[in-house]
Length: 312
Image (tube, rainbow, N blue to C red; front, top):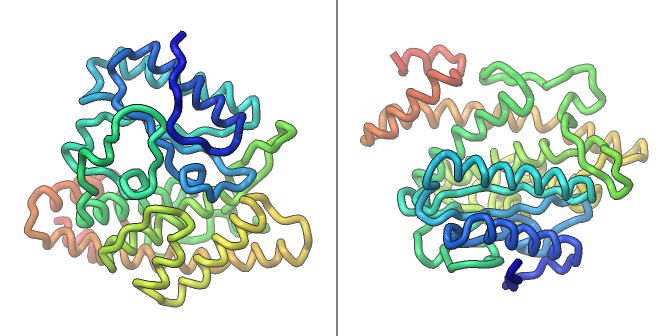
């Protein structure tokens, strides 16, 4: 099998070797069909912690030729992630068609903060996604996350996922430890709150966030409301100090419980902004935006009288 030299290192030998094997496998399985491989997230900007996962974008040239090509790409991805997880490495791999970038532009985490591993400089070829489109996608995506990562009915006053739980049901995901065991973690908590802040920045301030470490700082800079302190605590404590794991000391567990209590209020704040977003979209000049919002709400309705009336 040919050897392909990667143009970026994570500074972690085991991860670099796994990435090398992945590129070699895809290049041999799909010759001349992949435009580029990009590392995103914490391993791209060297902000990784011990329990960080590895985010990777594999960009296929133009579009998948047929369903069989897509299915093989997905099969190789799933086999690779299962194999590396047994070695305590977690990968999050996205398979993207280049045509999507031509149609809508490139997401900020890839365009502004991605690191090319192998292939062509796709980020120089296509523009950044327009802020209006980014806000549209992120606001709907976060609403979906808040009602599906923690299964809840779509209402303005979102309840805790689980009242009786020490952390109110927010710790519903596990991470693989170095010894191979699974432990509950705060990844979903940081995922939903981080994306909510990103969406609000796009909708309210027309601002992009490219890196996780910049999210709470950019929020303070552009919005600077009462939720900035919570977002900072989520990053500095849950990610930087506790590395997504649940703390063991009584004092720190009480600290985390207090953070979770505040998260519900931030979620409800987002839902109020999401309602305003929907009403604004339904009054937009773009018929396409109106139709996409209507279709999304038909599938995942927000139970609110004013929204329901506007959709009629």
